[in-house]
Image: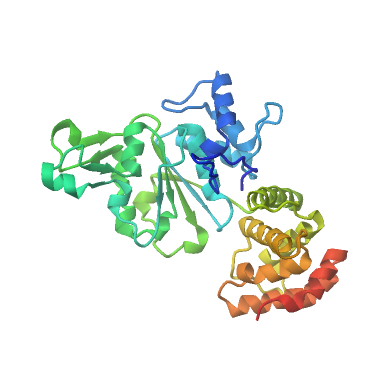
Amino acid sequence: MSAPATAVAEPGGEQPQRPPAEVSHAAELAALRAADSDPRPPGWQLSLRAARRFIVGDEKAGITRKFVGNSALVERSLVTLATNRGLMLVGEPGTAKSLLSELIAAAVSGTSALTVQGGAATTEDQIKYSWNYALLVSEGPSTRSLVPAPMLRGMSEGRIVRFEEITRCPLEVQDCLLSLLSDRVIAIPELHGPQGMVFARQGFNVIATANTRDRGVNEMSAALKRRFNFETVFPIADFDTELALVEAEATALLRRSGVEPPPQRDVLEVLVGTFRELRAAAGQAQGERMSTVMSTAEAVSVAHAVGVRGWFLRGEPGNAADVVASLAGTAAKDSPEDLARLRRFLEQEVPRRAGRQWKALHEARHLLAD
């Protein structure tokens, strides 16, 4: 998860809902580049130490912490990208894998926009290149009719390419990365001469992400796995750290949604505590575990919904009853079993907790949708 970002106005006065990292943190990146005297890997815009400071923060230099996770993970990821091996970030959904890849790409290349979103419908054209068929028919194959996809652009410009949810792609699509990652070249058979071979410039590499919940959907081949270093991104272990992150993120989202009051901290304590207990089997009645991933990102979404519900419906900050009303769509998306587990948690486990908001959460259990 990221620190709150200042929205950047677009032409016409409109503000984007979520600016990319290189836009929302442009001032910090510029300051780091100006003060960066450390050696940089070829093609990088920042040194490893400066990139690390951008991601994990430096209070003395006024650099905010943007990724709440293991600093050693960030260091290993940066070292991997300075070599010729790709970086694979794996973990449960909602553990900020995509955020980390975005921050790294912004720090290393100055842009996180070269992104492939993996899925069942992803094709090789969307990864490497395609053609403007009107020009192709009228002029034949040429650089003018060539439409570069993120991988071709990343190689020709020497930038990081992000490949989200790679295991959602068919195996034959995944395997088009084999030669790109080993030979560092894209062949374009339709073009002749030097234009038919695009060699990767210094700075090019690939960050891929995959959810552990997707294991077995389209398992990567052993050959492709060998071209990546794997790093696991774990959920936030510390309660206070997760609470502070949810509070910061929810406050920023509520501000952008036109909600004036910030979320109540005691309500957020109940919300985060509920998520952490639902996340772990030990906190469940009868030792049951939710099939839905109760991630920090989902907790932020619920906190956002709680604040919106309280402000726009009653003109006040959200309360514990709003938490219950907002939980069903997150904790029990399409599983009656999960809804039953959540109901048992509210009826049997919550009364054992001390505190006014925990009591209010229990009293509002009837608001849980059937």
